[in-house]
Image (spheres, rainbow, N blue to C red):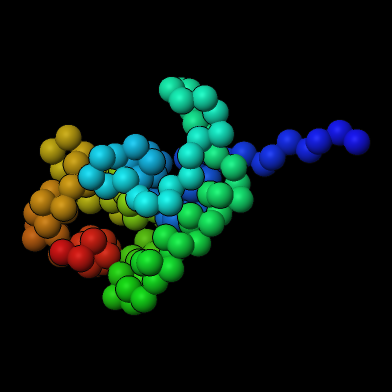
Length: 142
């Protein structure tokens, strides 16, 4: 009987499940200070350009991480309010999705270098009073 291949997933899968950017997941996997305990080891040889992870191990990490961050109701409420203001859900940790929402969808004034950093968003909020920007700042805990 032929052995079945294990199901493998990438950073994008983990990022989507955790509602974070792929860069954040990369930091979880490789960062020295921010490396998350229990992050699955790559199923590919060390140094592979695009690591892949056993889905079962990735799902276990995702479950633990979601349990660790559960209960932050203020953050969840801020996210839901931001989605309602925008009219759709986006990944509030994604620079690209935030830029599209702020500058394309909502037509807000462009920040320097299209920055969506917390200081840039605080300045944008002070200038515009945008409810969406206020919810994003609350989501970030600022």
